[in-house]
Length: 528
Image 1: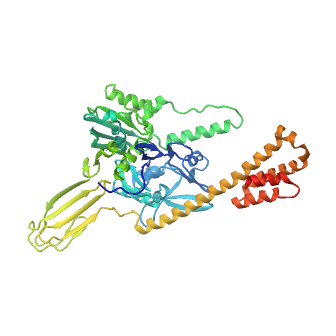
Image 2: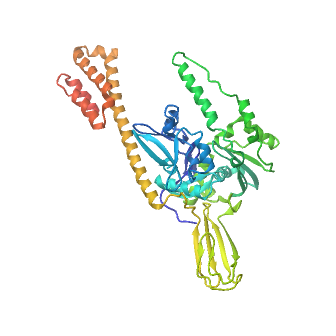
Image 3: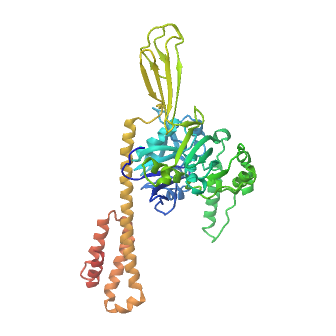
């Protein structure tokens, strides 16, 4: 067991539509709310002529600023511009995506502060953390997710498959910790449909198999066409509400929705399992729940865990385990995951070896996606070469080859460097992200600058108009009128103020005028 490190580790469910963050503190998992006190945050980033918007604020203005509002960035991470998924996405995304002329990566193009800016998906998706990824993610996508965490200033301790994280959340329930249970995790989100079959016994969670269906059906139930219909309906409602107090938004019915997606709903294999756990916001769809119940002979579905928070919950528990935090109940959990790719459904970490030989007489070199040199000249079939495949807990593959005679060895980490960020590019992106962070902080400071004096001016002006106060200060009526005029001036011009110092100085100068007298002095004392 690794030694305990400083600082807590958090779990991040980096979702296509929404993201969620959790941490285990005092032996209890807590979902970390955003600035709006919500447990989930929309996976949206918007760029305007003045500042950046993140989360719900970005999503709320997508209809007014579609070409500069980025979403679905998870679909671009670790991809090449030529990938089918990218090409299909470009048909429905309102924002512009172009190829990187040097590496073929997809580049997102937006207008920000009156200039054209280009971003990689890793920049858009940017402490010690465990980050969840779809089970279907290949090495390039996993490595790109790690890079995104690094660019965002995070120390990524491990990647965890989303269904596996949800299984940990389910397995932590004491009710499920007695006897062996076969559990199916059904994860239906905005971008993926993952299903994992696992066993749970005495805190040991073993993933038996995992599969993903979107690659087969190529249907996204929150894709561009239904979203465009909704946008058009909302735009129509907005125009009607300009001259009416109410209206009705009418789009395709739930029955029509179910009919269109019937082939997707029925695309699953029957298994003899004890429990079905629902993960992902789309599992709230009544038809999905009904079909699952019917398919499993009326079995009651497990709804004890929040489908939006389950993955982040499990990732936080895994983070606590890696950091040696939490009580005995948490530390006793052991999760045996599998890799869905290449060595399909093999428990990871894993290591496989095979002895090979040469194909030609006196062959002195073999190529195994890399070269192993220095093999002694000998007839074909004589040299003994051990090839080893090693997949770590993150699902990242290492391959080594060793000549048994000479001990000559070569090792390579399968990085699929084509299109991957280099160390120098990552370092440069970290600098860029820090610059944007500074800009965001400056914008927040400006907003606070505007709000504080404006709020204070409103309070003062409303106080002057209060009848109870007005009757007590009749003798200072001329001064009160002057104060009200100053407040109105501040309110009218507050947007032109660019800093806290400027705002307060401007108000204090007005209040310090001799014509205001002791009332201004009193107010200044309250502002100090």
